[in-house]
Length: 398
Image 1 (tube, rainbow, N blue to C red):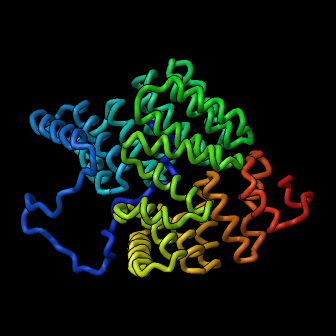
Image 2 (image 1 turned 45 degrees about the horizontal axis):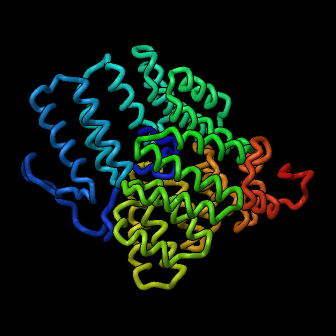
């Protein structure tokens, strides 16, 4: 399954991972390479563990088999996306790094996915282009290129990738791609219809879950919370782990002022940075005693990322400083930095929120310009823009 949405919300660096208790424990260096440090849990999908084990055995038996290596690396990447545990990305990196160039299309595709995970978008696009040179019918390369163009608000290029998917007969992927492009460019009604059509044609549970998630977001942007909740609950009922779905669902609950439900939904997900952020926000709203420890854990993780020069957490860190720590100036600096790289609606929202809180209209100009040029329809963002400049003639948001 290819999910366009995971690029922005669920990006976390491999090195930035920390356990829920924070980063205070002394480092441990194993004496031998075969020492088991930790066995990673599989929540409900025992078949995933079996598939990974089988692929590892297959690669051990044929260490030069690049197709098996690509399958294993991709499975690791999928686990990272499902669980929010970036260590799986590290495992995928290690598999890909074993092979010298030139790489086959399958390994180039996976390497591109890993690079976009760290926001190395130009390098990822180079990998996808090289993969398509080797295999012009490789739908995944078109899908991921479309995803990157959407993150960058390059809608003409995103639309071209949607068209390429349609020409390849990949109607579900093409519908998802086109639906998102329509949503981001001010056509929410058409986006809803296009995504619904793709959902009707989708049989794979993962694709259905992803499409339902995006339908939930579109419904929320259209100001239809009851419809959004139905879509989210249908997506959750599919029963597959997915950090993007949980982030979108709990963001919806927070917007609906239902933090207690967020605590219930994320109680077992503190290992994921993006989900721990939402859990800590809900706990802080409720005044729960667990909030302090989770705030400290997030502080430790963000500090460790800064020490390594890891910039993939900026949007989440901005939200942390704004909504939990009450530091709008710090939040605004982070949101501005993030918006130079990522320009999806959620990135615009945190930039606008931080600018309103910091009373700095100029800092949010890029997001306001995007809102005007894209035609994006979400009333919440347009209200934020008006708070920064109530004059429609000057703000360009009407």
